[in-house]
Length: 165
Image (cartoon, rainbow, N blue to C red):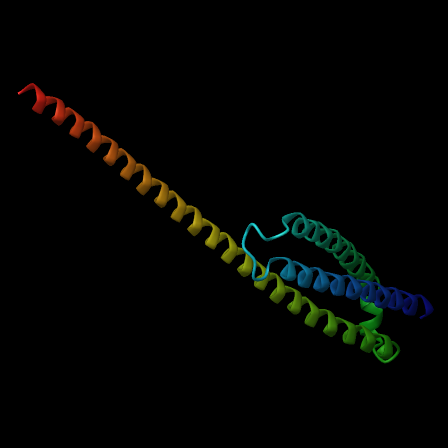
């Protein structure tokens, strides 16, 4: 029984570590939002944004490792805990409470990720529209320049032809 309680405590500790990492991901999401919200492409500090992405990647890798350890530990205790639920009720209740918090934080992170993705999509859309507008403006200016140049050349040719008559 002591061994199972020790394993359950290890599981509780690992979920607490995961919760701290999820809190860090929430902070990083909020920092990314502050980095991009209400800004144009040129105004965004992309180095900071990419640094935050890398830091989130490290946290996610740690979460994956914790999840793998949790799963392997759970396999060790599953049969005993399900056979004797009364013996481990307190630790199982603690695990359930932590898992509920983790689920809520996971949903919060997904919402933040989606919000940031939409902000970035809007930044890129505005940038593409600006580039298209500039290209169109350049095309119009080039067409106008060529038309005017051709008009001047024709006018000069017409003038030469008129003088020859």
